[in-house]
Amino acid sequence: MTMLDLPGVPVGEAGGTATQAVAVPPGRRRGKGLRPPSALAVVIFILLLGLVAGPTIMVFVGALQSEAPGLPNNHFSWDAVYRVYLSGQFYGSLLGTLGVAVVTAALSVVFGGVAAWFLTRVAVPLRKLWEFGLILPLFLSPFVGALAWLLLAAPNSGMINVNLRWMLNLPQDAVLVDVMTLPGVIFVMLLFYVPYAYLFISAALRNMDPSLEEASSMNGRGTFLTALRVTLPMMRPAIVASFFFVAVLATGVFVIPAVLGLNTSFSPLAVEVYRAMTVFPADPPTGAALGTLLFWFTLAGVYLYRRSVKNAGRYVTLSARATRPRLIRLPVGRWVAAAFFAIYFLLAAVLPYLTLVLMSLTPFAITDLRKVELSFAGIVQVWKRPDVATAFGNTIVLGLVVPTVVVLIGLGIAYVVVRERGRLGAIIDYLGTFPIAVPGIVFATGILWLYVRTPIYATVFVLVIALVGAYMPQGARFASAGLIQIDRSLEEAARMNGAGKLRMLFTVTFPLLRPSLLSAWTLLFVFATREVNEAVILSGPKSRPLSVLAWNYVEQGSLQQAAVVGLFLTVVMAVGMLFARFVLRAKLDSSNL
Image 1 (cartoon, rainbow, N blue to C red):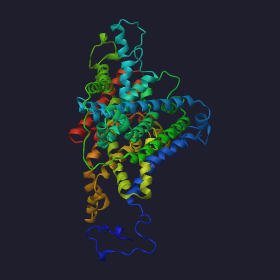
Image 2 (image 1 turned 180 degrees about the horizontal axis):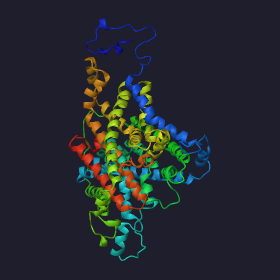
Image 3 (image 1 turned 120 degrees about the vertical axis):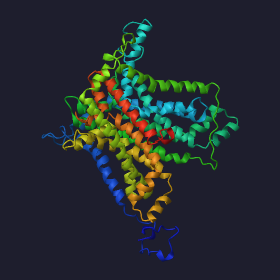
Image 4 (image 1 turned 90 degrees about the horizontal axis):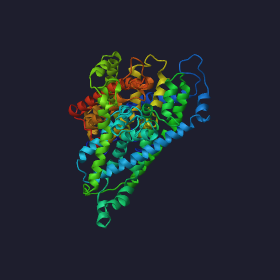
């Protein structure tokens, strides 16, 4: 036992005297050998095994079965693996999925990077408003956005095409915009993925030493040459990291292409997983095998993402002065940038949600503005349905329970990784971030195979388990970022005064982390209430949230009812965010996300 192990007497601090020293056994010096993991680390490790490792392993187990889980004739079989990996049946889907992911990630980085440079380096009019508009899609539902764009830009019945035909006196079969194509799907995906690239790159720009750019300007280089020769090379780690992060998200996307229905020669792998798991005749082993195929590519993306973040240390700039970059006043460029931000805000939020409200107030989803008759009858009719009330309750349960549990477990993960470290801490760190590599619909497949024979299958409880496991990286990331900024001497003082580890966490660490954890809770509330990928596989008739209910209406072709339920879902998310912002005082700007 060393001095470090004595409660209340940290080595090298006031209060430790020579008479309190404890002899170190021969062959063991402080700094050599590993301290045993704490009880908190063991508990967190066991939780992560059940929440993360178990479902992931079950995806591979399911791929090696012959039948659906729970059937008596089920046995070990390579048939599904052979069909997916070697038959060539899904090679087109794989190549198409990877192509869409790469293009979406590249365009997101371009648009997000340019937006970040203008908003951090140029005196753009109404900068705060445009920054809010740029990150707003993070708090909106991609499913609802895709549904709104389907109502807006479907080739035959879309509001844009229907009304421009009579306005411009065009033929009835004229198609001006078509969102149900590959470019259309990528366009809608960009609306929701550009904010991720913006957050990565804008954070790096704000932390960069502006004196480097000032020195370049003083040596005669203009604004754009400085940006290309100085700023862009310094932003390389953030650009690469954001590219791989968005590519991983786009590889596993399900809801946007599923709602819009690609008119191409391939279906994304995530859509193929859904069809194999739910469409008659269902083939769960093939769905699991497709999930493993998707998993390998997202895992490679996460590896490259972590590698790019690790290499960012070579690009760190240090300055003894606390300075802010001088905002450049581009005479024309700043107004052009403001116009583009306004167009993005219009396309990502204003236009889709105006369409959603309009379609909710019209019977039978009439898109011809000449024939629109506004009425609340459709909203009232949907509101009175018993499945809507049930879906409301399930959504509220998910929105309250999932973020609370994720934040608490994320705090435990962050404390073990940042404060305790050790080998178990490193394992917990990897397990805590591992769900990023598992697309939501693949993770739900593993949950299904794991819990299908248990009483909680197809209940809200199994949805809570799935979402807690899937969103663990977000909770851990917010808690880790806040914990790194807290001087550990505050926690050590509590321990010296007799507080146990749990009491110290809840009386010292938790209050200091409150701003970070509230931001995490708010974002996770939005994610949990809008979730479709996991819920569409795992929910039953009594456990459907609003998102799945709206998805069911889309599958049935009842777009007006889907619009109404999508509007209900938006109201739930808006009320939750307003409560977090004005009651809990959570900060929702880009510096806290």
